Image 1 (cartoon, rainbow, N blue to C red):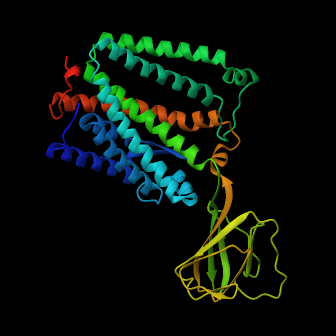
Image 2: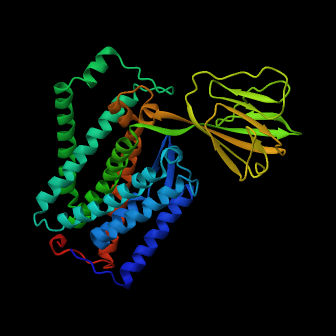
Image 3: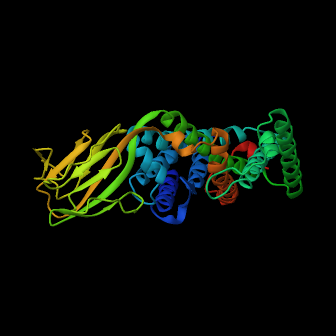
Length: 396
């Protein structure tokens, strides 16, 4: 199916872009769960891919990716994971956010194009039922792991449960049985309800948009950020009043101790921070893991750092000691950067499979179900209203 871009197509793209903007800039389209968020923006991608083909899906995927990238800066609904990867590399974050979504839209368009060429309704029903079987496997694995999961992120598995989940062939046989059950039930349902080819094709496309989004997004995360990188370890807010330190908060809002005279702070083994001359012996740092510090504030210009005048509103330095003088009263932000493996930190000691299923499982399943249902309803309505042309082989 080839769709020419006319006025109607451009209007549809504009409407879908408005929906993506609404979902991205307001809490309507994002439900944060841990480091990830359930997103509804995959639905406009699926609709664009169905109505306008691979090109339309590609365009809407790019639009979604750009808004997703903006969320990393706190524009719209803030992405906690995006803010973290942004500190590591803005370029890699852009690739992860935009390229993965662009590929999603392109492939969903190609999938619907392929489905529209299938002449046999039974073959199409078999494909739809296979999709349901795959969802059944995902649901089974997620439930099995989540019932052994507590709020502290630890797996309370018995030895028998752990052996089963890592057993190989026995687990594979059980998953095959789960797939067969999901396939059989869906195939029976499709024939009983006599769902049309259009409905089935829209359903598979909606499901594909959700699962491909998860696969591409998480694969890009692991491939791009599963290495030692420099990222922000903590962000401190330092309040100076009458030339002395009066309050220090870390990124979590916890109080950080400083000297009784308000002249110095020791940030663990990373940094000695002083704001005034002192006769007291200053503490020293040993074996610091920090690779960079960034101090910023609108009031920073004109102050001195280790004897050098600061020209702008922020200053970078690597020394494990910072002697600040001539500081105006106000709030100052200190960012501490260290080398670490982001994926290892995110996993917190869990195996990669357990991490992916428990952190992605519920999100992905919710997205697959919602995307499948709404894409089917919206796509079918558009075809019935003749707002988009029904491919020849999907006509009953």
